Structures are given as structure tokens and as C-alpha cells.
Image 1 (cartoon, one colour):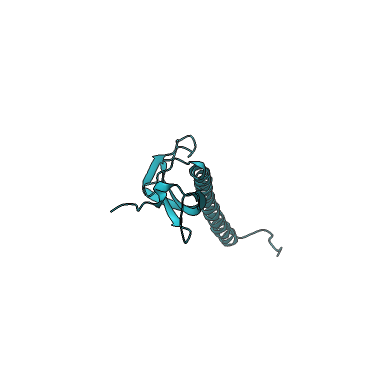
Image 2 (spheres, rainbow, N blue to C red; image 1 turned 60 degrees about the vertical axis):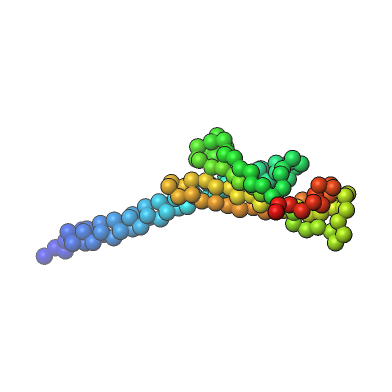
Length: 143
């Protein structure tokens, strides 16, 4: 009798199942990588927006102290996502004997928010800047 060459039907089914499992695993990995890349792209965009807004706040001498200021971002800058910011300037550190012209330290806290689907996400950034004290800065704030 002559030996038959080739694969049996059972061997073909087993090989097909193994190949299918490998392809499903690969597609799942690619899908996860794409979701992570999209999430990181959004996060990188938010960090850049936060740095841009913080730089603007650091040089804004008209920024009111102990008052929350906020606003939206242009959708062209956010990739079409709804996003905005909220900031607060506070006196952080005063010299031991404050007088007009002395240097004090102010803290700017900036919160960036954006919508990720139905969920609101936030990113907070702090910065400090020196300020020459004026007579009105030496007055107590609030009641």
C-alpha cells in the first residue's frame, strides 16, 4: 500500500482554530493600542492648553486676587471637544515685615477641564510668581 501524503480534515480544523485565536488576540491588542493612543493624544493636547493658559495668566497683571476666573477654550484648539479653564490667584507668601515695594509670592492654581464622552475630566496646574506689594495689597482681604 502506498503512504498517503497531505493533511487530514482534523489537522486542517485544528490549524484553522489556532490561526483564528491568534488573529482575534492580535486584533484585540491593536484595538487597545488605538484607544490608548487616542486617550494620550487628548491628554497631550490638554497639557499644552494648560501650559499656554498658565503662561498667559503669569504675565497678566490685571488678574484679580482671591477671585475665580474662568472661560472656555476655542473648539479649534481642542480638536472639537468641549473644554474650559478655571483659575484663582492667591497671595502665597508675604515677607516678615511687609511694606509697599517689598516682594511677595503669589500662587496661581489653574484647572483645565474637558469632556471625554459623558465624563468630565480635569487637569490641575500650579505656578508661582513674584509681585511687588502695593499699599492696597497690605489691606486685609474679605470679612
